[in-house]
Length: 159
Image (tube, rainbow, N blue to C red; front, side, top):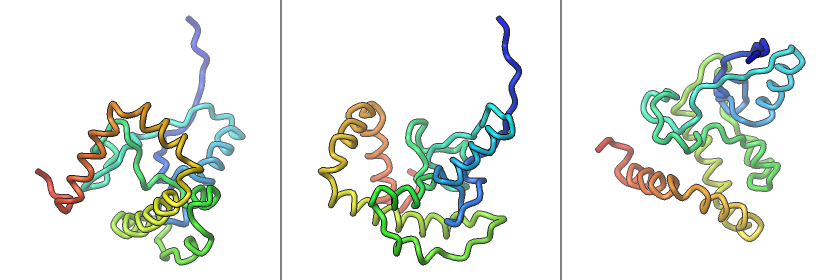
């Protein structure tokens, strides 16, 4: 079996530049992929993308299946009509060289909660897609949702 030679880069999406204090899977990720292609690279290896806990390590995830909410792009949520342009105006002044996870989590979760409320208002528009996702992923989603709800109810402490 002949294996073609290839090259690429190892980079977690949170390391991409972003105006929201952390890289995400939004326009900058698409731009990075375009850059890799123009540079002749064929691989983008990433670290695990699961939701992290204390220490924010991608190797200490709450789930092997769930995605990290911090990787959700506010810009894509805006393009989907789930956030308004005014929601994206009051972005904290983040250090471009260091991720302040506490501040980023507070800010992005406020945006995600607002997007969720707008999602609920527009539920008819997204009902089929959301229902299909929940049905196809119920083998892990139900347990993960219960675990995260219990964790939040108990203030995030370990038990």
